Length: 601
Image (cartoon, one colour):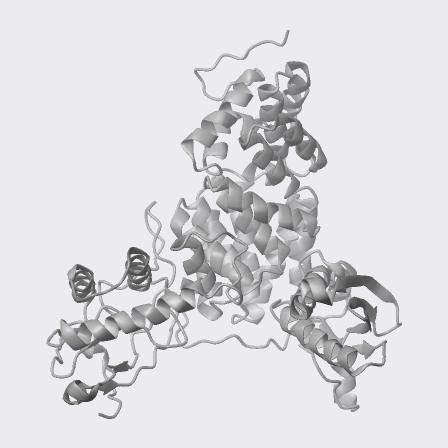
């Protein structure tokens, strides 16, 4: 049978889909082990909840199969294998026990998002589960205190379901074609577009030179360059160029700002690569590093991947080599008479470095104008979400009154970013953070996993995801990511060091906790000093704790009046909260009005 173009009214309702899932799982003819059943339940429930964009191999492996944050889908095919088994289990079920059932659940090849259709002969006018006018669709409005689903699915899709026929069941075979299209509210059918009002840095990756002269080294040099390009393009704030543009006047104005050059030497099994970033206008070397490896013990492909990830992270991540050198664009944007949206990105990172009311206001104003100039730029909306969120979570630092309004504005901006580009790591980071501070931890961690999967080279994404995992009680996996962010020099300075202090504190290593805490920038955020105060209290260092307490009372009185609230919106696990509060009380700091401050001895 040819593909059927099915209208919205031909789709099963949510209730019908859930009932069909229950029938499948209860059937003795559905042959699947427990982890396969958990896989099917997870992908169906996530799709019905409007979170199908999170159904990536990393997310499924992390949540369903318990893989840690180092999971690599290329080297560990557990999710692909399970998806293949589930497709065969569903095919068998519908050939035997489900031949007469009206709702078909299938998992198209090449992905993990299930599709739902009526079997041939069961057309109905029942209101579909994903119709945009249906009362059962995910609600994107921000009302009340309960978290609302932040992403909805398309109301129009075509379904394809294939039942493979054997010799005895050829008469039962049916084919129905599928095309599942996502349409994200509030901009239906929108796609990421390139802004004409921005000047993001362009980086030309030149051919890597063969320093050894051998054909083998030449192949490695080419493969390494390709791998570097593949890792760099995951960053949305830069434009990666693989080939030089034509030498025309128009091309000259669009010339890349930076050139990445590299060379490869291979002597027997010893591998060395030199990579450098050059500013094209004056030939200045902005950054350079050399990488060594042993092809025999490490493997050629692993060496290439490790080098490419390191180069991409160092060069293109926030606060990395490019962004540090592009700070001059901020001044140029104020003097060239035009509007430079990329300067707003730099303004945001500059604000996060200083964290004060003046830089916050400047970044917020710039990003608001950037989203007006280019309303289809996901990163601008994501950064606008984050800068508004800071008014909620760092109100005491920015001198803002305590209010839930900035959080609501931040949620709306995050929704907008996701609607434009659901695979943008910065948009997913914003979704993770606003969901976390709305106490929607499940959505936060799924968004964090999706952000990390989208660009594991982005140390800021890895660090923020690690912090949310840790503060949700998943300290082991979370602290691994925070540690990786610190090792990659993720910014702003001291932000992730205080995360490492909490990691050590929660595992009872007070000496390491204090060292990490003092390595963090204690002037950056009063919360850093509050962490140190709790550590000192737990370590019995009352006199040193008294100094921190006095500083906090003088410089962050609003924080000290709302300790329980500020800690509770960050540490989600009650036991973790009480451990933190116990340290404060041991330092003589009252947490609640019923606590009596204890004078230092």
